[in-house]
Image (tube, rainbow, N blue to C red; front, top):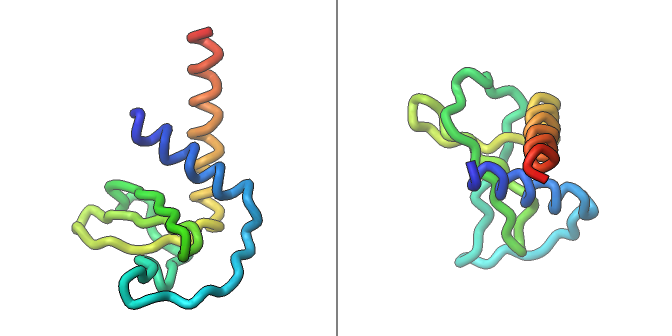
Length: 99
């Protein structure tokens, strides 16, 4: 659960920053994992979601599917945005109950 909370916090931090990034040359050593993103990934086929943010790359969402394939999902996908909003509200509610 702590990893999910951390992932949501990282995503929110990045989302609050300016979504437009300036183009930067990518060295051969530090390439972005996601070069292309998918807009349509069936949620039922997702086993795990990872959030990556590196200095030279835009925010990246990587989904590991049930067939062990990894794909990049567009962070602006509507269902992903809703998923994150729901996760954040659950975290806030649990924090209020603990206080």
